[in-house]
Length: 179
View 1 (cartoon, rainbow, N blue to C red):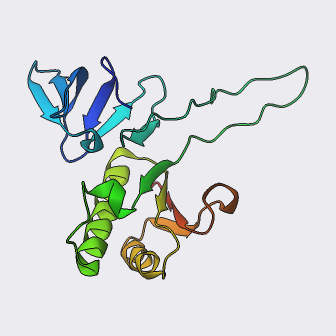
View 2 (view 1 turned 30 degrees about the horizontal axis):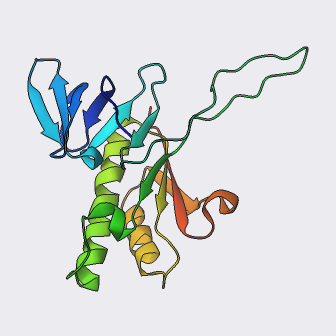
């Protein structure tokens, strides 16, 4: 959950600022230019300025505490380099809209694909190397549409996400950096 004093970026725009107030209308962010703007929590990405690749989507749920990603040596043993956590995008419709009541299956699928595309473009822009799209099991329609979306990009590969952590309802995308 976002807290007062957190540094955040807006997903849709190149706006960065500090959270100054949280109200029922949204999260108030003060930009570096001194402007006060209000956004919904799901429109914000919390930035950990100590770790350049640490982004997570604000969903109103507090993130789990993360372990230190620095390498260290322990009494003659080689230290293992830890990988930065993947950005997670939950595409369950109840996470994307206030209420799915009245939405057709087409509306739901379109909303989910739009969100996936938006988050994928965000990750590409920000250089985030891994994204996990949580789509659930269902009949496999959303998963098939995601694969069609991913096939449009030449700079990524995808596979089923870690079964132990996500089950069979998630796909992990790896963005390839072009030098």
